[in-house]
Image (tube, rainbow, N blue to C red):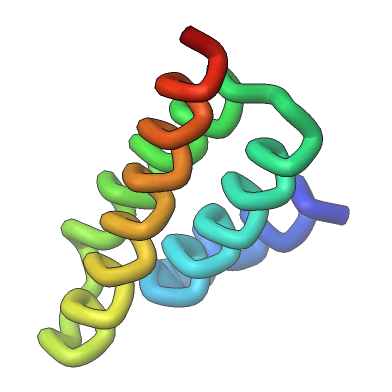
Amino acid sequence: KISEGIDLAKSEKKYNFLCRFLLIYQRLLLELDHLQASKDILYKAIEYNGLVELTEDKVTNNVYILLAKADILAINDAKK
């Protein structure tokens, strides 16, 4: 279902939806302890956020992206 949602958003060029969907997916991967996959998805979300047209949406996504980065850093530190 996740792949279907991503494919639909890509085909309709709904980059804001795609970015936020990937951020949710990234968080789930992080909770499931798939750190590398989580990082990969986060970079995709950052890439799609660059394509978002509305500034307000971009700024909101940037906040969520920063929170995701902080979560990844916290987990990396905890593992060390």
